[in-house]
Image (tube, rainbow, N blue to C red; front, side, top):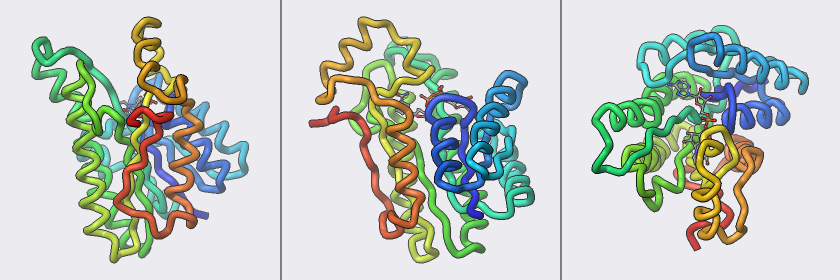
Amino acid sequence: MATALVTGASQGIGACIAKRLAQDGFDVAINHLPGDSDKEKALAVAQECRAFGVKAECFAADVSKFDQCEDMVKQVKEQMGSIDALVNNAGITKDSLLARMGEDSYDAVIAVNQKSVYNMMKHVCPVMMKQKHGSIVNVSSVAGLYGNPGQVNYSASKAAIIGMTKTVAKEYGRKNITCNAVAPGFIHTPMTDVLSDELKEKMLEAVAMRRYGEPEEIASVVSFLVSKDASYVTGQVIEISGGLSM
Ligand code: NAD
């Protein structure tokens, strides 16, 4: 049975991706932040994944920390047997205009959103190389493609992920490892629930489909990218935004 490791999978898009990949027949390794509240949520996600008849286990690690990623990858390999798909989904926002953004907010977002992708790919790629196959999907954002006021830290982290994705695709293509990115637009999750109704309405004016996306609409594209149907797709960024950029 193939195993998928999804970071930041205790809620939102990550939880939805974990469940979709379980439905597709993957055993699922569910990463969550250390701490009781995230662990409880991750355990509930694992329970839902098992309903599809697959194995699902939870692994605590702060993915911004290199050593914790190394330990987690070892544990996943030991307990699940292989790592066939990696989805780098964990992410945070700490929004404010550049004029007011402190160094702490900048560094924190870069560490969780960008450095984590390095940490995870650094430890998972050798496992995939030994297996002679693997697929990686990095969760970027439309903010990384077009910029977004109040998100200089977030946009930087999400743009960097695109460069990293293309580089890893080039470095590991001959090893039968694909690496792609998805760039979601405005998606209904706890991350966007906190925005004011006024801002939500305003953001939708730029969306051709005039609605928010659902986490399931991100999970279905990730499902394709880690499937055999996408075996010759690598180094690509798929925007999932209801037509934001047109
Ligand atoms: P969310 O806040 O609901 O979920 C983020 C998850 O990441 C949580 O489970 C959280 O615990 C986890 N996480 C945070 N820091 C972590 C760390 N250091 N180590 C391990 N896990 C950590 O957000 P979401 O909307 O589901 O976002 C998921 C991904 O999608 C993020 O990368 C986000 O940037 C991206 N994204 C979201 C939207 C959107 O509109 N919601 C749009 C574009 C991109």
